[in-house]
Length: 229
Image (cartoon, rainbow, N blue to C red; front, side, top):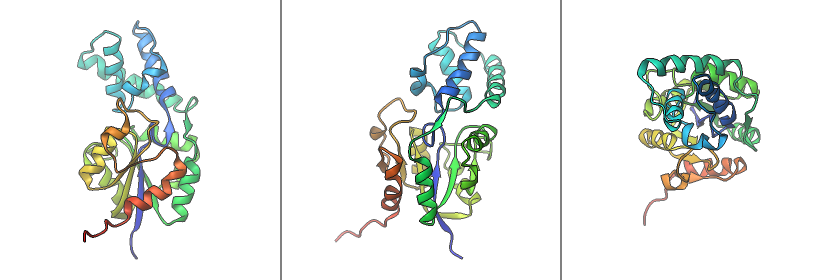
């Protein structure tokens, strides 16, 4: 039996707008440490590289450096607080569920590959009722490697028992694009996620403005390149 083609999704800023909850937890940490809360508008420059980087960036813009021991303590606190409420202020982007339905009907396997810890990833997918749609879900701690290491992506595809030669990565950041590129897999990006520069400048294979465009973009991404005359 031939392996299915696969569409692999990032989570934060790709499938779901999760910044409100991520920033809420960061602000709990900041205020507890005697600093001012940061506005949600700072999310684009802070979110996207994992909780440790988020905390480090949050303290940096607040003018307070962190030593390694303090960062680790705050990171563990962040994970605990976040797990208690991962998605009360978050939502799936418009058109996500319809796009997942369309791709599944067209014969694609689906997976998630995110640098969010697997516990929080599964809690969010369960919260939105979409966990069962994915053949594999991989978080930052699922393998010894994580994005932008291409093995995070290729091992996710392997876990889904899908075809790595017919795979597409859907993301919203330079990390997603770099991971896909290193794995030799085309990338499709959304412009409404967490990136400090316009996503087009990072040169993914395709940019879509709405998830309604995704099935057609996936088909184009997997089309063989026409031979040169």
